Length: 70
Length: 147
Image (cartoon, rainbow over all chains, first blue to last red; front, side):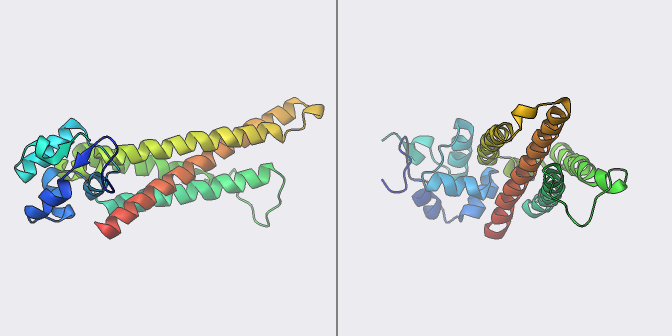
């Protein structure tokens, strides 16, 4: 559970790496700050619906692939 | 606008507010500093002018600048950072005002003392404002260095 938020499990780091993107590249493509991506990956921050959809759209996957309830 | 430019604008504003507010607080508490800022001088307008110009530049870049860059600069995590810093500000102000109330000489209370306390509270709130601006700007600097 190390990198997961207590209310949310996420696969963002794995999917980002599979897509061959750095945090910076993903943040620019999804139009959010690199800090947001880093905070989500490290389970510090739970993103909004809009941000989740933006990230999913950028990584060409569903939001359910990125995030799961614990 | 970039993280570095925003850092520069907010940091300069913040540090100047801290300097002036700390100077004013020290004066109000009777510490004599060798040199003086005259309140009849143009010097006293510097912090206000900086805040007006700084916020003007930030507003203009927000409304007229590149939308994609602004989405990144003002995203929801940045807003969360801002709220957290503002919450620290509320706490600092609360503690500061409590302390300022505690150190007053209530036994010899006068309008002069009341007036002085109002100045102290205003100077302390000003100091807190400067500290918050500086903390926020340091977050931007980290993002510029790591981004």
